[in-house]
Image (cartoon, rainbow, N blue to C red; front, side, top):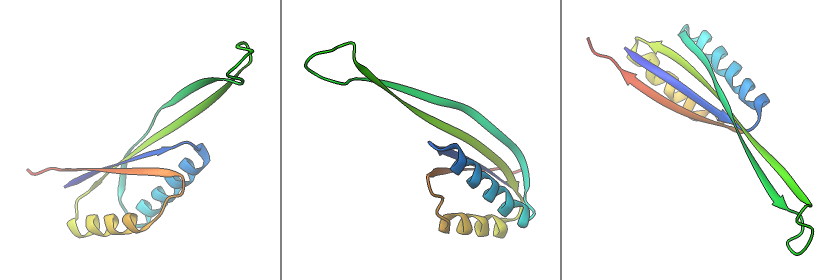
Length: 108
């Protein structure tokens, strides 16, 4: 029995949601049972930069980077379907989304 975690990270929330819906559609097409769907807390990194390096220290500009994360967890019992799923997901390019796959294997 294989337990697969799909960790999705993106700077853009729309592309993350689009990738998530595509993965859920793909998993329901192959009759995989989705165990959990977790939304992780987003990371916000703020950077303050001086506009002019010589004078006007009060004149500053602020930038913000937001990192969104989601995790999908599913269980696969069949070994052939597991390898088919990995082959399909390996060939797909998700634009703007980093996909990390963590696999757990359970023996009884």
